[in-house]
Image (cartoon, rainbow, N blue to C red; front, side):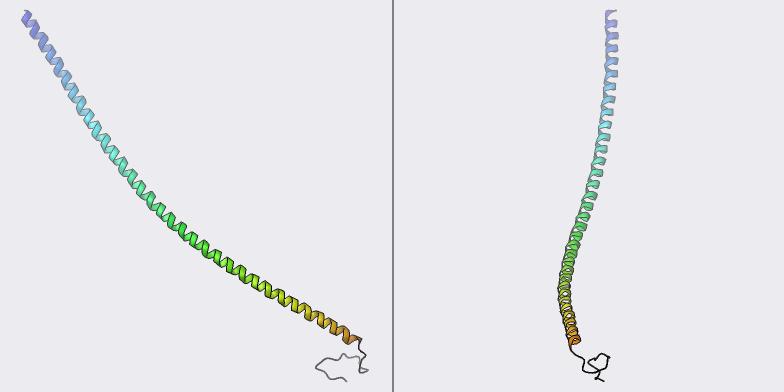
Length: 136
């Protein structure tokens, strides 16, 4: 009777341990499956990040090229502006010189006109004498 009770206890312990072993094997399989899925997910995330990095690097290179072109254009335009300023300054100097000459000529003409009006008339005519006319 005791042997039978021991055998039954032993069989129960064996079933319990077999069930526990089976559960542990299933947990291990589930854990390995989850690990593979996590690794696959991590690899996908790494690939996405690498693709994003490559795209960002390409965009950065394009922006740097655009910046360099813009800087070249700004330098070119600055040169054009400097040339235009220089030309405008030269034109202003020429204009000022011409204005001075015109003022001097106008003053000389006014002085000559005043001198001419002070001289006594050579003829009795009231017609003014012009250089291209002969006196009447």
